[in-house]
Amino acid sequence: MADRQVPDRILLVDDEEALRDPLASYLSKQGFAVRQAASAAIARTMLRDEPADLVLLDIMMPGEDGLSLCRHLVETQKTPVILLTARGEATDRIVGLEIGADDYVVKPFEPRELVARIRSVLRRATRAEAMPSMEQDYMFEGWRLDPLKRRLTDPEGAVVAISSAEFRLLRAFLDHPRQVLDRDRLLDMVQGREAHLFDRSIDNAISRLRRKVEEDRTDPHLILTVRGGGYMLAADVSRVDSVAA
Image (tube, rainbow, N blue to C red; front, side, top):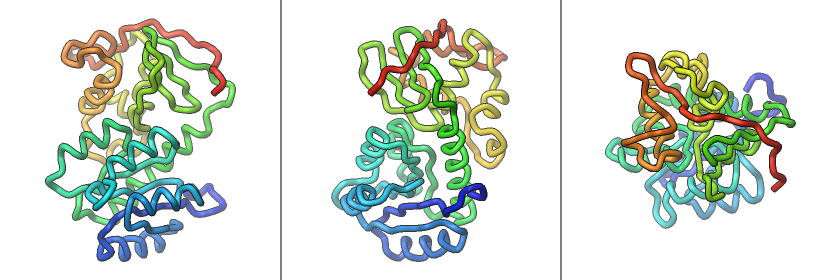
């Protein structure tokens, strides 16, 4: 990104050398510092040695697949993940987003679109990192959201993995409890200036978030649909001091 002194570090994980090598070369020419891994196992080793600012991750790989590695990254690190998927892998894409991937790109893809998505995800991650260090946690209906660690815990204390997009969406609701937020406002709050670049329905994002926080997403009681208006968080929200890990 333009405001950094060093290039953003991208780890490209794909077992297809014929795709991986030219893509790594293209991304390097766009100003990224790119490393390559031919498998999830190699990627795990490389990330232990040196972290990445973003991981480009193929879903279908021999051995450990991309979804398993994505789940590991979401649960143990804050590294954003963009999935590289085949056109027929719709179910895997949905699962990837549900376990915490930030975005996905369908093969074959236009490299310029991939670069736009990478930069968008990195911008959002940088804004999240820049949040004030003294922020308090959000509490609602027994749930707890730590905005610094982007960690969501359910009423029983179990950690629920959420993607960067789901985190931003949930925080928008928590900052405006019991207020109706229409789709345009939510898109602006969640994606900002990048919203127009992507064919993403806010309704799909709401559905993914409901899977995380509702007992029955078909009969939601926390995130309500307001006819003709948008959506509303039907819960009181309080702020409490963060608990040291």
